[in-house]
Length: 183
Picture 1 (cartoon, rainbow, N blue to C red):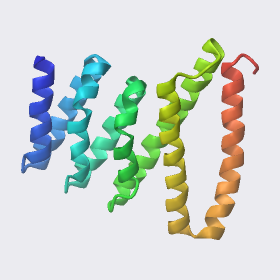
Picture 2 (cartoon, helix red, strand yellow; picture 1 turned 45 degrees about the vertical axis):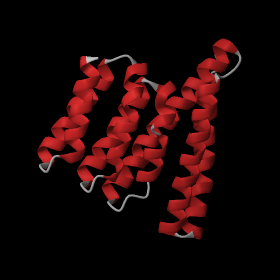
Picture 3 (cartoon, one colour; picture 1 turned 90 degrees about the vertical axis):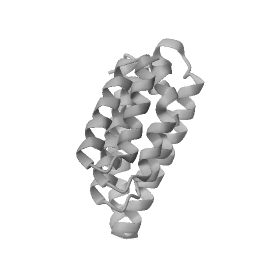
Picture 4 (cartoon, rainbow, N blue to C red; picture 1 turned 90 degrees about the horizontal axis):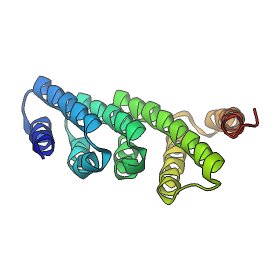
């Protein structure tokens, strides 16, 4: 309970304090707490963490995306609660925040795909929470493609999407086959 109260106090500081250095320090401490406690306890704090997506400071929003990535890698079964944050920050006005959202989401995409392959290999099926999370990841991928088309135009993005999809399909299939003992 002390960890929860401490995390809530730090989240309040990250959200309300006037000094950017205090906000970032508080966020770092929150991250450390969330990574140290049981994932189910950490997940209770996710809605408070998600409030930081509307912070006026881009460094706070970028740090939030990095925390989402770290938490999602450790407590994947609770990541669906934070996916709306990642999706919203894909369209952040600050290009560094948007880029970090793409980078972090791509890493999470890979980890989720790998977990799906492992579950299929060991159990012959994928757990429901992971199916739900995969739905979020497909939405993430679609949003990234939509933004790329808006930024780079249909022709350029269409070519890159074709190349990237073919390369991605090959890499994903290779990873699945390797994890299933076929490679």
